[in-house]
Amino acid sequence: MKPLRRQFRRMGGLGRNAKLFLAMTAVSGFGSGIFRLFLNLFVLARGNDQAFLGALMSLESVAALGLGLPMGVLADRLGRKQAFLLGLLLYTVGVFVVVLSSLDWPLMAAAVVWGAGDAIYMAAGPAFMAENASADERATLFSTRMGLMMLVGFAGSLIGGPMPAWFGSRLGQPPEGVVAYRATLLLAAGFMTLSLIPLLMLREQRGGAGAVDDRVALSFRSLVARGDVWRLLVPQLVISLGAGLLIPYLNIFFKQRFGISDSLLGFAFAVSQLGTGLATLLAPISAERWGNVRTIVGSQLASLPFLLALGFVPVLPVAVGAFWARATLMNMGNPLYTAFAMEQAEENERGKLGAMLGLTWSVGYGLGPGISGVVQRSLGFPPLFMATGATYLAASLMLQVFFGRSERAYGLGSLRSAPGTEGSRRDG
Image 1 (cartoon, helix red, strand yellow):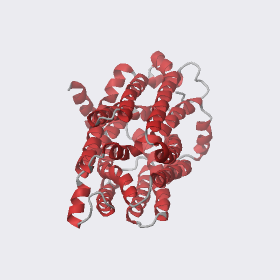
Image 2: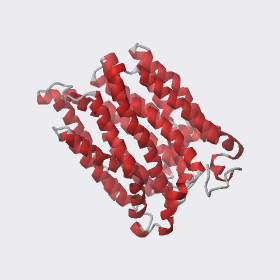
Image 3: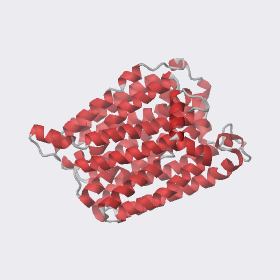
Image 4: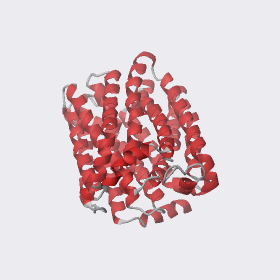
């Protein structure tokens, strides 16, 4: 309990902007927890198959990929608050079109708009956190945000699980039909739009659109040319490809493999998010003892046996327990990684670096679902579990090779001045 109390004290010391950002995250994350739980099932209930679903999810990520760098520039020039407002507008429009359209092609168009909103958030979010926390507070803020997303996602999944059955009974529709799922998703989208309230209360820390010095227009080229940036991006790419192959479809996997109800599905995902949220809140304390790289790599490697148990043990309680353990271990180090990445850039470069990280994630997450939909239709899920495990293993080993030795010698916060990294201002 002492580590948890210490983490709560650190959270209480965060500034006003950081706390409002966390409130915005909480409100949006609650709706998103419900939305993500049932989106795939809604698309399939419409009569679409896994290949269409994979194409839809890939298009969203490809749009975020194509727009990632322009949105990174826009996030730096507009200022973070205006960028968040634009991102929320685009995301909300995309979500409502996806849920309300009876045709297929508007879903594809909405996925592009949705992806643009995602791209802005991926660029502006990490930069905003880095700018509204001191160097000592950043790991706490990044971890708190990730943990909070998981905890409110837990609430969203737990409360949202019975919603399709409730709406179905009230509307005289099947509990796993299009109408019940659509009503559930509309309610979730409404919750997400309420994040506008804390967003409007944010105070822009910088001078607005003109605050970014024009001389950093070359920063994209300078970032791309830096070895430390590539060492950050390549493992991100490998993990995103593995995640895109499998993670968006785990709700479908449980439905097809075990035939579980929506309520049980919601409970399983809720507990998974709860465990991940608690582990994420404690991640900075683990990093203090073991180091960031050892914490990230160790937790990712420890998740692999549970990933395989989830995919290949045909016993529901074992699969659910493995699902919980895998998610907790695999995700607990994510905010540490993002916080470290933001340390490698100057303030006026962070939106661009955030965009590059988001862009890299979108490459893998854009390719993965489309491939996965085709594989599911012909071979089922076993090859996907093996492929995802292989990519996670490869990425973890890359992180250890790229950063492990420097961390042992200098500490992760000092990597930029380690021997062999003099070629750039902030190497990792």
